Image 1: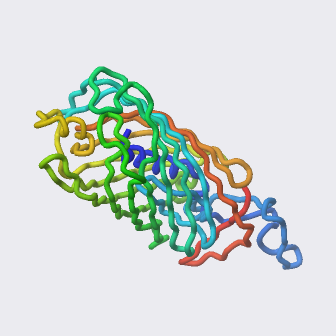
Image 2: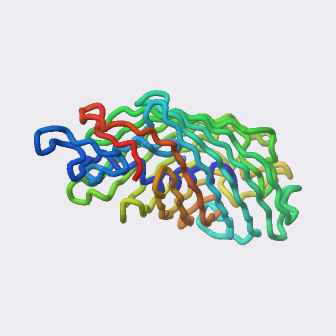
Length: 364
């Protein structure tokens, strides 16, 4: 599985499974926790004794990285000085190669797994920086190998580094957060065959996240959408050379079943501008073995996740996705598992304002 397909899925799943991000803004109430006491004095209780009632679930700044990626940001950024860390595991299986006309061909199967550590840091209350790198392993199962690594055994290596920045722009009526992400190959990895590690090119993605809750009608539900464009370093195979830029998009709906359990469903789409439509007649062996990085891929992936937030700052999640529509692409499917962790700072409640809604950085 190439790194772009993995990135697009993982960013959405990891974002979709973080109830911390969309749990606020909340009006934080307690039985006498915030407000006036009998004699007009302010009651003081420990933060972990406060009772939280959802109001508008888009303002909690204790969240987790990406995207994403899609897709490398989220509409909600971290507080200044806050950081998060996590890791995800994904297993994928390719059953068919899909041509430009939608016809499926059984050219053998591809089995892959990826482990991705990732982290974020709040540079200011409006700007968050993100980073990750994936370790992957893949093997080809079939009788039509396209490269020396398609030998029926697993081959593992690092994929691409990603560094990005998210800058929150608006909080009302939507959370709107532009972002940029830089993709840098970790090394000169293998580009040939069904099990090619990635595309081996520099890439710059610019996009926008927007989202909010569903207000008084469904206060426990939220949505988030993303649109972006990726400019890619020129790809050359033999005498053919093009910049295979991409347009990406995603849409996610989530619902807080309980304060600790979040369900979400998402869709991701990609369109490659330029490249080869397959099947085609290759002019030489080099075009055959390296065609994956020159494909004019288009696809739509759908999936869902369930996340559980433990008391404190640890969230674990599991998800699954499939590819219902593709052109000149692999038909991917598989599960993912992961966790996110953030050492939250115990802070007092912040006053509501047009630029800084009320947030509670406390245990749930």
